[in-house]
Length: 200
Image 1 (cartoon, rainbow, N blue to C red):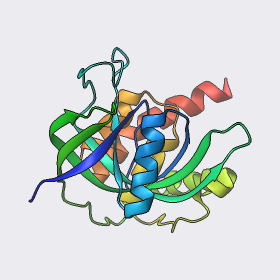
Image 2 (cartoon, helix red, strand yellow):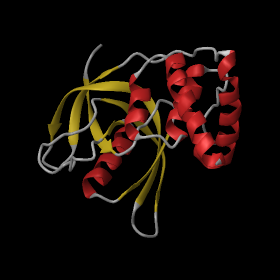
Image 3 (cartoon, rainbow, N blue to C red):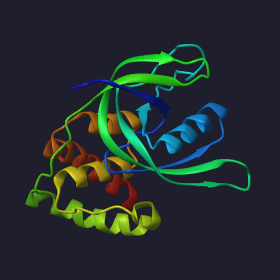
Image 4 (spheres, rainbow, N blue to C red):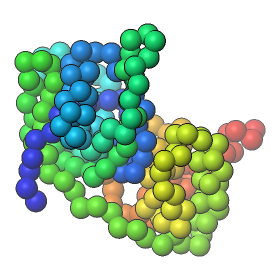
């Protein structure tokens, strides 16, 4: 696949394809990035930043190499002057190289990863899909503009990976694997453990 350049936004979050990304932005460099993305109708790349990294403090890029493109859906200017942005996840990518610009932004040469195809949800994971329906309903506006595919193992796994209270490393693992059923196999015991903790 052909590599191309994209602005990189290292965050302490993991964005999944078809997932929501609400942001509140106040740093001038990222305000400039968002403005340029909206003006040019281009996405930016979200990568998981590592906790021991001061992103932008010198060229000390310390983030995972597999991330997700984000396309801006909507924005608003808060009364506190902070820019609110709603974006959604697109294609996954791998960062092949990066460069720190003079304005403190990272630009990466990325290669898009193959999109995961829809996979029929195995019957044994049907209870997870039913639970996810309730969760998505409770989350309301966050998922109101997204098409729901509760019969698709890929979609169900990605949604659980983004809403469950699991570690960022576990979320990143779910992003990096391309096995829809394997992702559900990984998440199912974590979900059981969380539900047991909440009922005790």
